[in-house]
Length: 371
Image (cartoon, rainbow, N blue to C red; front, side):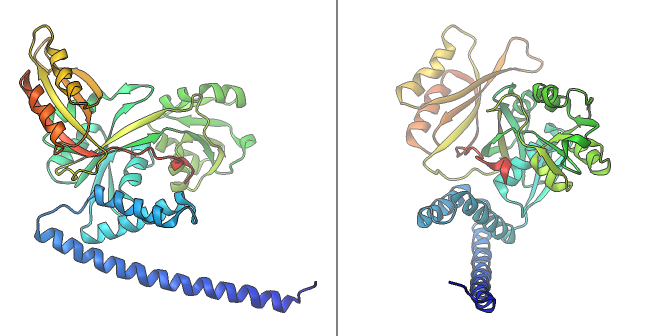
C-alpha cells in the first residue's frame, strides 16, 4: 500500500513533536533534581559532611538499573546518570580533582570515570605532586595509579601513602587499550607514528605487522603524540580514545595493543572515607616485628575470621636498612565488626599500623574505551 509523502511527513512530525515534549519533561525533572541536590548539599554542609558519597551514588545507579529492567541500554543509562549525579554533586560544592597528567592519559580517564565530567580536573607532573596537593587542600581529591596487571605495583604511589597524611576513599580499575589515531583516519596517509615508549612497546607486534615501513618515535607522553598528530596530517599517534576526542582526531584502528587484559588499578585520594557499602575494601600500612613467624601472625587472625587478604606488598623503609613496610588490602570495611576485630588482633604483632582508608570495591570500567 502506497503512503503519500505528506502523510509520512505528518507521522514523522508527530513522533518528533512527542520527542520534543519528552525532552522538555526531562529538562524540567533535571532542574528539579538539581534543586533537591543543592538542598542536600546545604544539609551536608551544616552537618560537616563531605559532598562525595560513593556508597549512596552506587545505590542510586543500582536502583535505576533495577527499575529499567534492561529496556534502555544499561551501559548508556550508567553513563547518563553518572553525569547527572556528577553535575548535581558539583552544584552542591564545586570540586577540584588532581591527577597524574598530562591530559587525556588513562589516569585522566579514570578520574573522569569516577567523578564524572563536572569537576575541575587539574593535571600534575608526577605522583608526589598529586599527594602534596591533596594533603595541603589545594585540590579536594587526587587520582593516582597503584598497580598494573602487567607492570606490577607503582612504587611512587606506595611511597606517597607512607609519606603523606591522606585517606584512600575510592578505587577504579581501567582497561588499558591503545588506539591508532590521526587527522584523516586513513592508514595509507601515515608517514610517522609517535607515542610514549611504553605505549609503542605494548603495540610493537601490531605496528610491525601492519605498518612495517613506517618509523616510530618515542615522545614524553601519549598526549604529546596526539597534539602533534593534530597539527601534522602525516603523523599518527598511539594514544587513548579520550585523546582522539580531545584533539578532534579520527581512529585509524582500535585496540592495537599486543596483549589483551592489561588493566590498571587507580586510587582516589581524599580526607574522608565513605560509609560501608556491603562490598568494601580496607587498606592498611604496617611494619612487622623482626622475628620468625611475624608474617604468619599477621595472616592468621584474618584467616581465622574469614577476612580475605586481597593484596600485600612490601616496601623498604627509607634510611632504615632491612626494615620494611607492608601495604595490605583486605576485603571489608573498617567499621565491620569482624574486620575491626581482625585488625586489632594483628596490631599486637606490629611495630606500626596505620589505617589508610575503607571504600567500595572498584568496578571494572567495562567498555569504557568505546564511550
